[in-house]
Image (cartoon, rainbow, N blue to C red):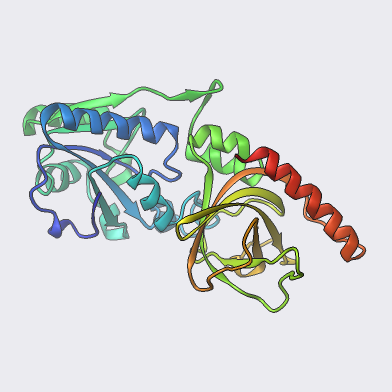
Length: 313
């Protein structure tokens, strides 16, 4: 997958089949769209292209209201990794600014879809809007497509368990600790990619070495306090593991600096600090709690590990 952070760097994409959107979570609905542009690209001997935005538009447009407390399912790094796995040919990441938000829908089509990308086909999701004040929609694209000589296709609503899949629905499931429901909506495990580091107060004893995980994007969604079953990818190895999440803040406001994410990976006591680990969440096992002593803690952790062993294969 080729990645472009600047529209001026785009060169020689063959017969582009393009879609656009935030794609937070890269959920099952997003994957339906990407599969379609990949299929259409193969059919016409072209390449698939996804145009997305960073930061998230709501963060820029509504910093004091709708964007202020918006938590994202994926960090930028995580989203790129998930998109890479879809077979997408090209990813275009546009720096979303107030100035860019004022671009009209016709200028977005004329300057970017046609002028920079030379789109052959444009595919959008159900009820997708774009351009200044979200004035562009499928019908508008369809009419402009006839003028600029590109085809337009709309993907119908994607339902799972009779609920319309959306990034908002997935965020709500994760914030409630409903990991398995979020997995069904996402069509993959919820992911955290973070850098490993050691805190002096980390829980350490012979049978249970742990490592802390640094989350660098402040708006990254972290599930609620508790103990979670995970798969942990460290370099080329994958381990079953437990993650303990705890928010130490006494205030209602959320800050990542107050949230501890701590990993114990089964079968290793070596954690290369300052290197990334990928955590794939399978299930929330129990609430985070305090213990009367080390023996009680060990007994609980043995029970937790047994659950993980049965849950993750």
